[in-house]
Image 1 (cartoon, protein in one colour):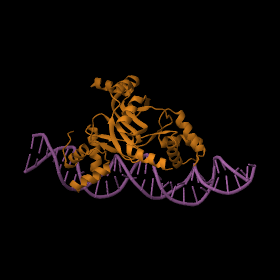
Image 2 (cartoon, protein in one colour):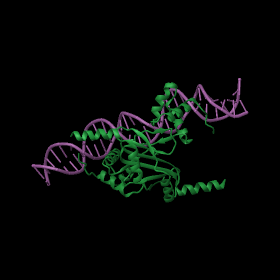
Image 3 (cartoon, chains in turn green, red, cyan, purple):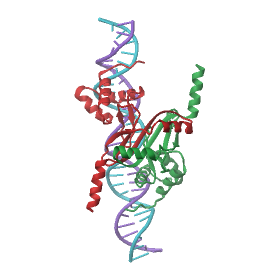
Image 4 (cartoon, chains in turn red, purple, yellow, green):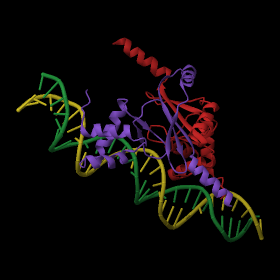
Length: 134
Length: 134
DNA sequence: ATAGTAATGATAATAGTAATCATTATCATA
DNA sequence: TATGATAATGATTACTATTATCATTACTAT
């Protein structure tokens, strides 16, 4: 089964590759409508699923209730601020750790989804300010 | 605000601590009904949220569409088989990695959610068998 | 034992994602 | 370039996990 290169498909992939944020299906829908006004939300979902299965994009199941998508398929992890929701890229724990897991678990590894949670520098600053004011 | 020790709350925590699987809200609901037949699914959800905020359990946002809960709050990660869905515990990448992230990102780290995806030994064996047969 | 309040059960509401289906667009081949 | 097979689409509905609501009940400090 070959994958046809349709307008929606191409635009979704382009958008995910160029934007460094990690948009949700709905965010992509709103952006795509500017260039493709008649596009349906269903098309967004279907293409995201297909592109993910083809390994062209990554799906992030963060704790926000809706899925995020990432056009950067290089090995990396994410850090999310629990205050403002900002998501940034970070380096992954490295190949040595993967090797250890493979040895210990007996699994054959395919990928990883790593999310570290914390407070971003800005929120951290704001919180400290508030504490001092008490 | 103090947390009252109710039957449902105690049973949920006990169940999560003793079972090494990572049940969903609905699975917990079905198990709890055996001991507490009049319990409501809403109670399960409310208590899971509370226990998570108190740091007594962990919420896992895996890619399955529904949340899993983990009574083991020690620092560890998870490995999931994409064939059969089995979830096992693995060791985390270690403190050195955390330290690196903290330095690089400027974030103040709170926790991490790490999921590695692969094929479990059994599914791996089965797949290899199928290939040989072709 | 009681008063104050958090927790509960039952249910409805919400929201994100998936399924359906008739129509349209893509692309290998002629 | 025209054509035919079929994958993809838009519009809509269905599904499912989770959250909100509200009257009633259970817990606990006193």
